[in-house]
Image (cartoon, rainbow, N blue to C red):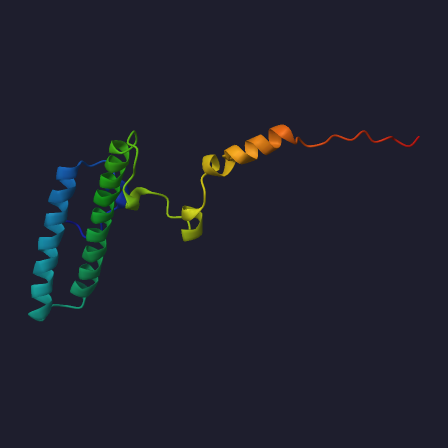
Amino acid sequence: MSSGKVKAGQLWGKNKDELRKQLDELKTELGQLRVQKIAGGAASKLTKIHDLRKSIARVLTVINANQRAQLRLFYKKKKYLPLDLRPKQTRAIRRRLTKHEAGLISQKQKKRQMHFPQRKFAIKAKA
């Protein structure tokens, strides 16, 4: 069996298969401890169950982070990103006009600016 707590730093270097294997080992050990708890095990089993659950969560976190990183690489050059990979921001910011859209000027406005430009006035400076 594994030695209880798993350090997240050790997990980042492992590949997908090793992480899956470790996850399976942790889950089987957790199942055995739960059986022992029902059979009337010691109180130390409860803390071990807690540590195992947290270790499983760490392994799953690393697996999911790696998976998201791979997806980000895959969608890097694509036109659209999946919703869960886009920046969250706020609803209002997501619906706001883009910088390009905000800078666009209509044909009517272009004509108006061309025919009636901003008037320039010379101001006499006081000495």
